[in-house]
Image 1: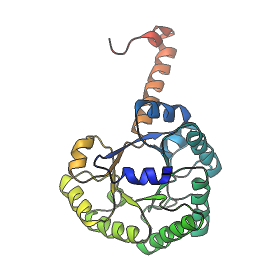
Image 2: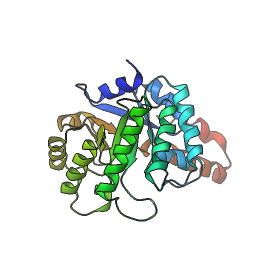
Image 3: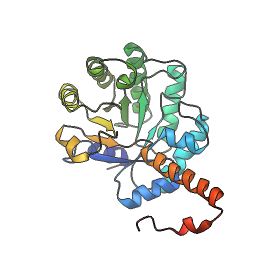
Image 4: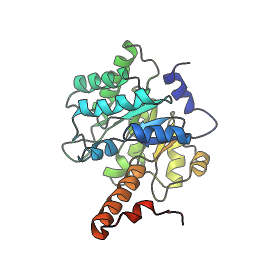
Length: 259
């Protein structure tokens, strides 16, 4: 069994796939050491670690280089967050997906939100894109490569449930392996979506949405924390460096935080 097949099967096991999100080699190695069975990159964390904002502000080749170093240094499957594909047309996005696949990743997240203006892509446009991506991957020999189709309905529209289900069904018919709905948190809506789509549902951790076991009961198959761990690490560094300058005393670097 290759890693792509292994990663696919993780979405259909009796347990929920709890994905660790990394932004560099060290964070990926720590997640692997801690016991995460698969790793996803966080575009937010990668961009921010270079002093940039999320939203495809980082150069795509620079982004690729980070993904490659992660893939080359861990043994668990790695799936890459490539935002909306870093391109303005289908051909460019498809070629970018193939570049990512060639690095040895097992899947991607690709979203349906627009990058240069607010709003969502038309369903028909995203359908065409997903179909083209799946076809190109199959032709390159990446059968069953995991396309996690992210829809930003819960971030961008009011009363998003019905459109989320509509988009999810179209995306799955167009070649998506799973559906990612960040922002979704109400139990009844989670149940309705898992009941109405024929693909694994991935949710994003939120302050009100944290427990894997509870989500498993609701039919969720995959759970990730996105940039939350990165934000915690960055906040710690920011606070400690400010204290160093203010206090001019390095004793805080030897403080036991558990005391």
